[in-house]
Image (cartoon, rainbow, N blue to C red; front, side):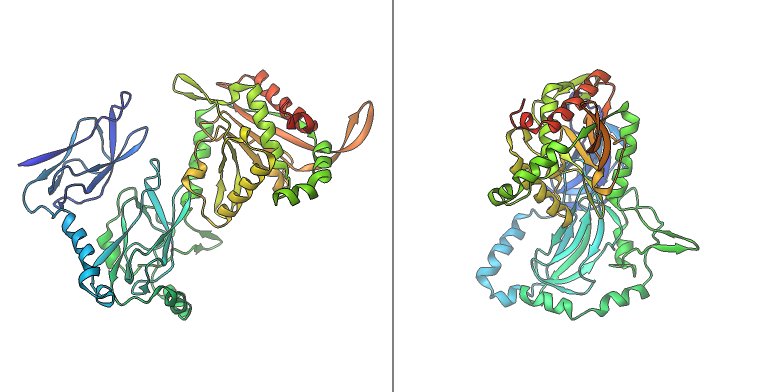
Length: 476
C-alpha cells in the first residue's frame, strides 16, 4: 500500500507550483510528520510533511513546475521510520536514570540545520564558521554565521560535543540543509569554551594549506551533494578572493546579489520618474540648535534631521494619499498606515529597516528607533521582521556627500525620497541675495500610479513642513 504526496491548493489564483527542494532522498525511510519538500508558488513558499510513515519514492525532481493536484511522490509501506515519540521518551528518561556526566557521553549525533527565515527566503550562505571540524563545542556556543538575501543570523550549538563541518564557508545551501553534525559527549563546559578557543590561534593559519573552493564557481541552483562535500578536504575553509593578473575575483554575498536583482527588477517593473526641489534648512538647523541640550536631557538622544524628515513625509502622505498606495495586478491598494523605511548603509550592503506607525510617534521615539536599528545593523542583527511592510522609503545620500541623485523605488512601494548634503548657497530672499544652507530633495515615484502633479505637490508639501517646523509639529 502507498500514500500519495500531492501539491495542495494554494489559493484561487494559484494554478501551479515549483518543486523547490526535496528534504529527503529517493528511497529514504521517513516518519509521519517529517518535512518532505518545499514548494514555491508565485506568492509563497510552503513545506509539505509526510502524512504517513514509509519509504519515499520521488516522482518529480527539484526545479520542475507542476499543476496543483499533481502527485510528486509516493510513500510506500515497509521499513518505515519509527515515530519521534520513542526518541522523546529517551531524552526524558536520561536525566532521571543516569548522572549528568554519563548523559554527556551518549555519542548521539545532532544535525545542525539551516533554519527557515521567512516565506520568501529559500537559501542561505554559510558565511563564517567559528569552529573547525573536530573542535569541541559547548551548548550555546555560536557555531556559524548565516547570510540570507535579507539578514545575517548566528546559529548556536544545541548540545555539547564534537563538531563535524559538512558545508564549508562561502557555499549557498537550501533552507533545511544539514551543514554540520555534533556528536555529543566530552565537550567542555560553557565557561571553558572561550579560553580553549583563544589558545588555538594557529588554526586559521593552517587552513590555507588546504585547497579552498574556487571563488569563481557559482552557487549550485539545486541542493548540493552533501556526501561529496562531507568527504572533501574543503570542510570549513573560506573561499578566498582569487587574484588573476591585474584583477581579483570574489563571490558576491547573498545580500549584494539580492540588492542587484532587486534594483534591476524595480526598474523593469515600474515606470520610475524623478522630480526635484530644494529646501532651505535654516529653520530646522536653528530649531535643533535651540532645543538640542534640553532634548538630550529629557530623551537621552539628539534631535536629528531624520525624525523631522520622517514626520514631514507622514504629513505629505496624508495630503497626497496616492503615493501611499501600490499596484497589485489590476488593483490599487491604498495603505491607511504610515510605516516608513529608512535606508541604512552597512559594510555588507544597504538594508531598509521600517519605522512602524510613525504618525503615532513623537520625534524622540523615532530617533530612538533609528538608533536601535543602527546598532542592530552594525552588529549584523537586523531581523526579517525589521525589513517588512514599509509604505515609503527615505534614503539619505547626503551623509556620504551626495549633492543630487535619482533614488530607485523599493517595490512594491510607489515613492522614495532622496535627501542630500547641505550646502551654503546664494538664494534670493525677499528680493535680496542671501547665503542659506540648502538641500536638494529628489522624489522618485511610480508614474503608473502617481501623476506628475501629485508628485510635485507631495515634494512641495515636504518643503513647506521643513521650512516651517512649527507647522510640522502642529501637523498643519
